[in-house]
Length: 120
Image 1: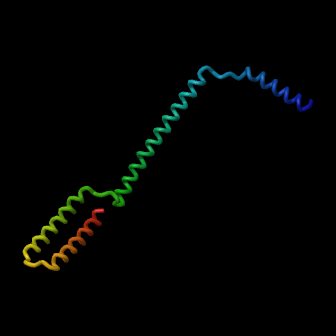
Image 2: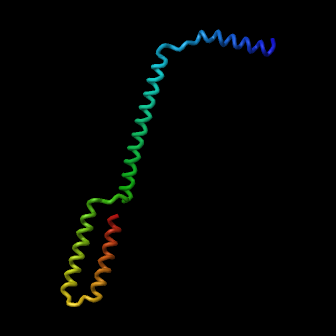
Image 3: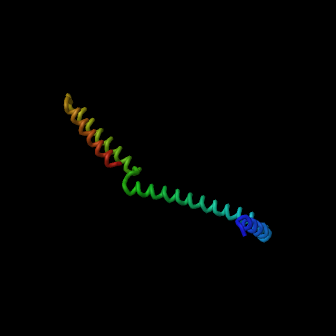
């Protein structure tokens, strides 16, 4: 038996076996249903992962103090306004403020910077 005869006998065996293999009637619907279920599962997993990442990001930012605390802002603003009002009243009482105005302004800016840094 030569090589050509072997190939011919193999082709004949494949043709004969082709009649034995037949897909079932519900193969396509089952395949489509499995593909849809897999797609839904992937979407669900992706959404869950995105929500989990967002929650972790917020938690980490809150833990490290990167997110501003809304409760602190009014207190900082009130403290700055009160300090400024006290300085302004002191300067208005003096007849000739001169360098006192400059020093008071520099001191106020220093305190504002410290309060701003603490609020972050």
